[in-house]
Length: 106
Image (cartoon, rainbow, N blue to C red; front, side, top):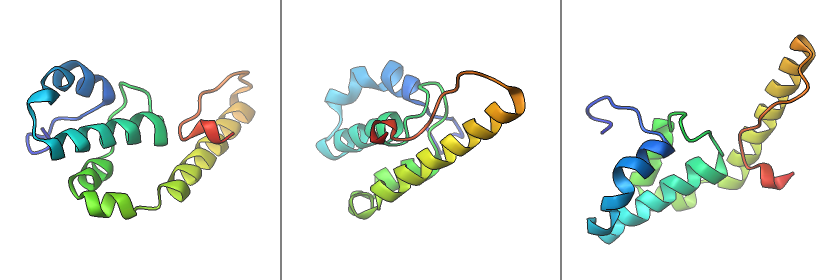
């Protein structure tokens, strides 16, 4: 999909690929699960927002993926999200906001 220039999001993964995952080899199934966990939990992006190519490339190299400092990355991502939401709240006087990142850490 990436070679064709298509974007990928969690919704696309679930709608188009979930039904055929059982026919893939085991390594690709593991990659699929990792990508869903990274996009849906670790960086907790909305299901229709594109998954960063960086994460897709990491999933293709399982050794590199497992050595990646996910704890620091997800925490930094969450802090940036909070900072953006707070700045937006101050500028626009909004009362609610959504956060990206591993919000369970809060």
